[in-house]
Length: 137
Image 1 (cartoon, rainbow, N blue to C red):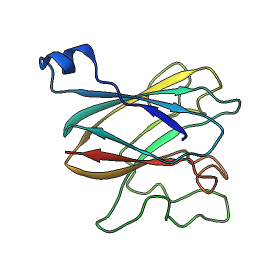
Image 2: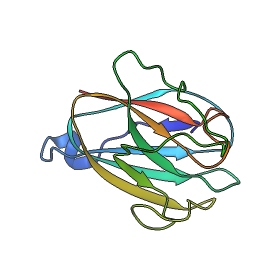
Image 3: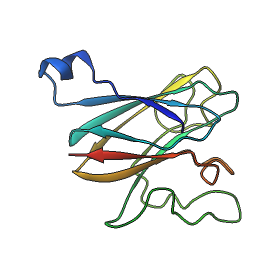
Image 4: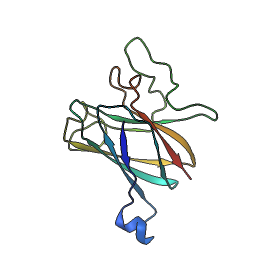
């Protein structure tokens, strides 16, 4: 994950909707960062602006756990146990075979206040730095 445009939906800006919508762009280069959202229903619109397939998996961060510090297995992936949601369906929402270059996907999750890690968990992507923090207040 290399770039995030932290935008709220028009309804959020006007205070008419408690849903928090964030746009996340995934590219092939490394760059860490943080985005924020309000607790409750959070929608992540993920656009792959890179040249290869990506995905976005939402994982909880334990107190004191650093972003990017998960153990990577022999398969080049981190453990997705406890995943709260995934955007990996080109042109749709939820899980699929990955987000193709130029395509978008969406995931909507209910999140309590805390810290979360958004990761691309395709082989080798996490270890390459494709992860970012989502802080929910």
